[in-house]
Image 1 (cartoon, rainbow, N blue to C red):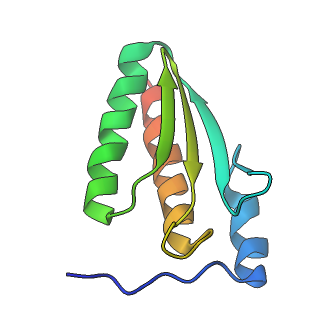
Image 2: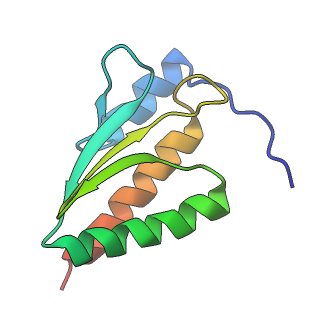
Length: 105
């Protein structure tokens, strides 16, 4: 099934949605958001990336990311829409949720 094209976030949506994303920052000179995730070790980082990759494949929305040891830098933007969309917000929220699950006892 082909998903309908996404529209960039409106100013109202940006005002409502972006402040709720803890630790995510706007990327300079690009309509994108970025966050660095830090895990206990490489296994935790890679496990998180695997879980995100499975979700991303189902959502047909793939992050830009870079991993070194226990750190994963993530940039989200919807290329087809040439900017931030609700898909990016949903992906950021899911990434945060998966990361939080790794830190709970």
